[in-house]
Length: 331
Image 1: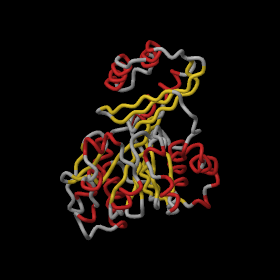
Image 2 (image 1 turned 45 degrees about the horizontal axis):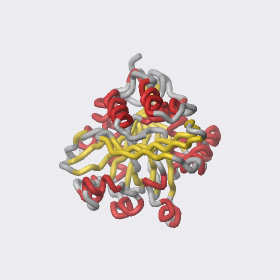
Image 3 (image 1 turned 120 degrees about the horizontal axis):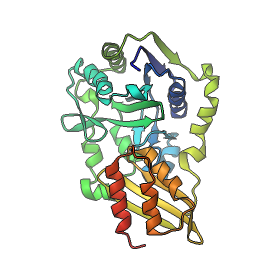
Image 4 (image 1 turned 180 degrees about the horizontal axis):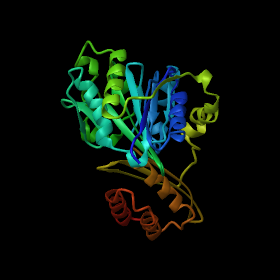
């Protein structure tokens, strides 16, 4: 089914729990032949990926002491810092109309119109020169999907580094200054670029790449009573931090596709609880893996069997890496 209509949505709130709830609401109520461009900002916020451990990704106490927010999105990927110098974008569409190249062309076209040359790099970054100004993440439901990302316009990079934890593996492989040195604000490339100009360029580019939007909407929390349930989920401690169970066995490793930590709680050698933390973009794979492991006896062959039972649509390179990792472990 091809795209027949488009819509641009703006959030007028800077609360990440509201903005992420609105994102989910838009996805749930999306027509399959529609595409939405959603533009939003969060103030003083760390947003972690669906499968990440909050305490390992963020200096949570420092964030709370500064009246900041911790939020968890439903997509995979790594932790990011948002302030009002950053603009977030989300493309929401039917899964059959998902086209990463086309979606990215909206962003790249808008930036080119402001004299900024940029390109997609690695697994989820937009860069100008050798420096990153945008991290992207993705969510795929059975019939609908979204692609969202950041656009660092004039963000406080010192605060970004202060609140985000960097794993020992990343420090060893890339050096402690890597986060600061490899990130750039768009305003440092074009000092005349302002938030309202960037929004207008994105709206113009979106209409040119897709179809002229039939509707442009601004949302405020007071007008969205139907968001209460989703908002309460995103604001809850349970969603943001998790249950905090003590675990008997912890596996950790660094792969080409991301960091991984698997925590297992055993009772009489049977796996009772599983938590998987990763910055991999394949969030659904690890949610399904955790479910496959529950109730199994803690044996190497059962770990491998849980991998072999995964949906065939997942990245087979990740599954192969995990099989080899489990096979080589001394259990």
